[in-house]
Image 1 (cartoon, protein in one colour):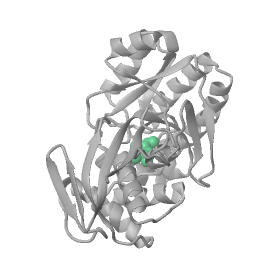
Image 2 (cartoon, rainbow, N blue to C red):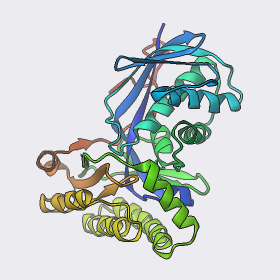
Image 3 (cartoon, protein in one colour):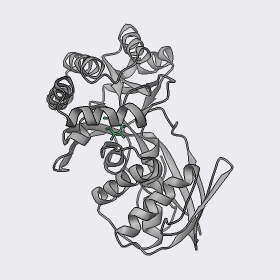
Length: 326
Ligand code: GLA
């Protein structure tokens, strides 16, 4: 029998380019996800959109294209002691890739959950998130932080995740029911592999504007948590504006299109808006009053997303009391 594993994408509400600097992040897992449907096999053989990839169960050997993701995840798990059990099946997704919604992390997490389950191998969520973060580097050379993987594995319905990337301590922050979250894709593909690594080097080299962004962004995450907790829309608007300006001016990861979208969001009646994720394209995140969200999303060409459950197995089974797919 095939088993199904589902891993959500994420929208970072605030706290960008802080994770790899040991700072604070505040993402939600969203109701868009990658699903892996598999049964045990000798090797890892996966089809997605008509393209099949095959890799060794321990991830060794040369692979091309998207096969680099299962290979990298399998290799990272093998390094932690997972038995080399393969799997055969397919991967489906309603999470757009390249839109800055953590689609590669969601793929890694769904694959990792499947590989672990089929080999009866257990890891704590943050160990699994760290393994998938290393897999991203191994697969495509992006030295990402742990934001996307942690959000996918630790997200909770109707809550954001406050994660301290230095200590990996976290807590969930319930979101006010009067607020809705909208994402708007700029249509510009994220160029994470170029500018992203440059910014990390500039930060590590102590470039003042880059350091200032990280310091002020960490403060804004704390302020935003307090503002969500007292449902202070005015404060959230100010904090999101400052975050966007800091990412644009101090960290230099915005684009004219992202800047325009943020202004259009405010003009359409948004309470708060900023670029989200790595920048250089991708999406903006918008907060709106619940009752006006659908209209604002339509006007901006975006979509309302819900803070959703963490990645998990969703195989239907009589003995499984966990909730199925919503
Ligand atoms: C990308 C990376 C994350 C994080 C964000 C910026 O999404 O994958 O680790 O660094 O950029 O906050």
